[in-house]
Image 1 (cartoon, helix red, strand yellow):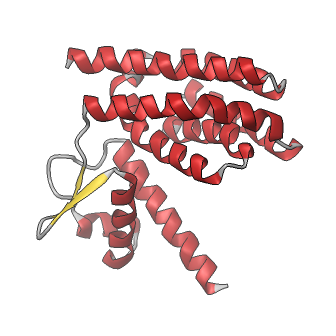
Image 2 (cartoon, rainbow, N blue to C red; image 1 turned 90 degrees about the horizontal axis):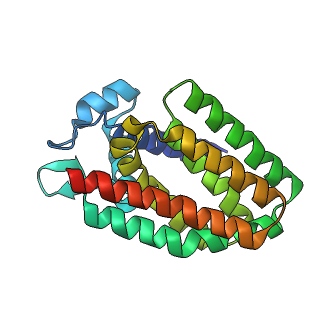
Amino acid sequence: MGGIIIRNLSDQLVDLVRDRILAGTVAGDRAIRQDALAAELGVSKIPLREALTRLEQEGLVRSEANRGYFVRDLSAAEAEEVYALRLKLEPEMVGLAATRADEAERRHAIETLGQLDEVTDAHGDGVGAFNRAFHLALIRPARQPITATVLERLHVMGERYVRKHLEPLGRDRRANDEHAELLHSWLARDVAHVALLMRAHVAKTMADLRRQLAQE
C-alpha cells in the first residue's frame, strides 16, 4: 500500500511543478531554484529532482550539466510540429472513442466540459488543465493507450503556446463553443462529423498561433 501512496505523491508533485511551468510562474531564463521550489511545495529536493526529470522527458524542461534544470524556450518550429502531430492523430482517435465510450466515460466527458466552462467563465486558473482533461476524455475511450499517452504529451507541450499567445485574445469562449459542438457529435457517435470538427478545432488554434508567433 505504501508504494501506491508514494507513487501518487510523486505524480502529484509532477502535476504541481508542471502547472507552475505552464502558468509561466517558473522563469525560463535562469536555472530553476530547486531549494526555493522544494520549500514552497513542502518537499525535499530528491522527489523534486525526480519530478523535474520526468518533466524533462515530457519536453517541458532541459537539464545542463553542473547548471541544473531550465524551462525550455518556446519555438515556432516546435509549435508547428506539436499541432501537426495532433492533426494527424487526434481526429481519428476521437472518432474511434465516440464508438467505444461506455456510459461512465460519456458522463465523464460531459462533467469535464462543465468544469471547463465554469473555470473559463470565472477567468480562473486551470483553464489549460481542464482543456487538456476534456480533450483526453474524448480520446481515452478509444482504448489506444500508447496513442493517448502521445497525445497527452502533445497537449502539455502545446498548452504553453496557447497560454502565452492566445489567452490575452479572449479566444477561450470561442474554443468552448467549439468544445460543445464536439461533445454533441461525440455523444451522438457521429464518427465522421466529430473527426471533422476536431480537425477544424486544432487547425484554427494552429493558424491563430502561427499569426501570433509571426508577430513576435
